[in-house]
Amino acid sequence: MVRSLVSQARRTVLGASLVLVGVTPSIAGGGWYLMYPPVDPPPKDGRSIVPLRDWTTLGSFDSANECEVMRHVGTRMAELNIVRSMENPVRPEQMSASLCIASDDRRLHQASDSRAPH
Image 1 (tube, rainbow, N blue to C red):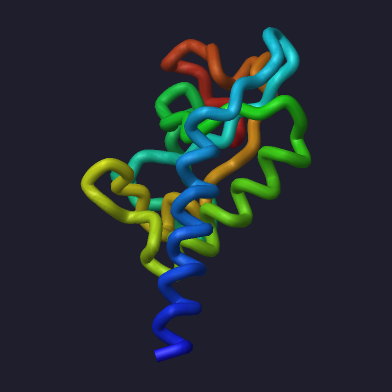
Image 2 (cartoon, one colour):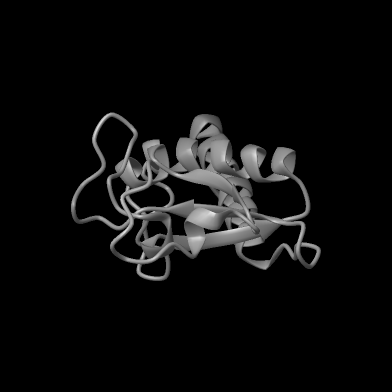
């Protein structure tokens, strides 16, 4: 019974943390985005070949550190299969390939025929 309560509490706290990811504001022009790649083609070895401009933004943050903390939390939640729901269908392989990207990163706006590394 205690183990079940602890598990439920952990899920509630982690779920609340993920909700915060989507509503945390960043400062204009100097923020960071937590982004994850699409499911297809699937990321391999924690990397995606899809250009960043086609990734989904999960949240925005004032600092790289805040973003990395939430990326770690989101990745762990995905590994525990807590993240996936109808409202948030992020898969573990997507979160493993997620990145914190500066809002002014030029890769977010590259032309579709560009072959820049990701």
